[in-house]
Length: 405
Image (cartoon, rainbow, N blue to C red):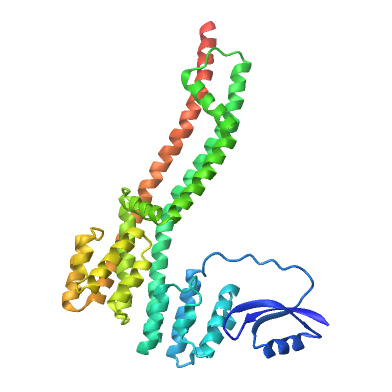
């Protein structure tokens, strides 16, 4: 009797793994079928301990886009939903996402709607995704909704990549600058200070003494400073996770020069595109505002949208409460008001989203072009300051030698 390790989904759609005793693999698979387990992998256990690191978060956005587009194409071609999920699950290269797709398939086979099955995986399918799929199932236009979702996800992914790309360069430069300064303070300056003492140099210039003092304190207090930095990082993370801290940091981010404008434009583009997609898909405006608020990405903007939703529930229009929040520019509010009055809200929201997508692109390019020379100046200034301080005694010794001739 051998042991066979297996992975699969139960009849309830839950992913599980385990070990089954059987004389051969065929018998092991038969026993799993008798247990109503839809297995994805069955292999002979070698007695080794298999360690699988859990994945943090959901799947890659690109993987989700491909899945959504392929599912829309198959449904449009007339294939049954269960068969679509079975095909997509079998060919999915991402093992973690494959488990998700097969789990969804198992639940749909048991009579669950696609939207209800998606709700079981909140880390993969957010509220917006589930709400749109639910609207598509109710309206009988699931393929159209999935295509819209894919387009929306692609645009959101490009926008996020654009913003992240702009922040990667300064972050890399700051890390490089910190590493260079640590090397200078920890290795180069102590070596040069030892040389000056060895040659019996006169009193060092004030600038050189200051840099040497920094170096000595850096080496002496490095463990304490490292401990303080770790403590500050932990305190910052805990503060950010608290409701008050989260809102305060988001407010500071919005008020920060240059960066705040970029965050605001990005949030407006996300808000208008999300709400436009929901409205055009037949989702009620109150539900649309609720979903949009939860996907805003900024607590201050989320509170503003929820305030607007509360006023709309009282019978007011959208434009008035949005203007009261003082978060959205006058132009956005006026265009939404025009969309409400003409009955073309979804079209107007899409136009605003397209406009602000372009604005974000332009702002990111401008920010990148501004950051690059500033970073070069900062790094050059730091390194130059240290080099000048350490070369001043050498220049002084050279002057003394030339004066003695």
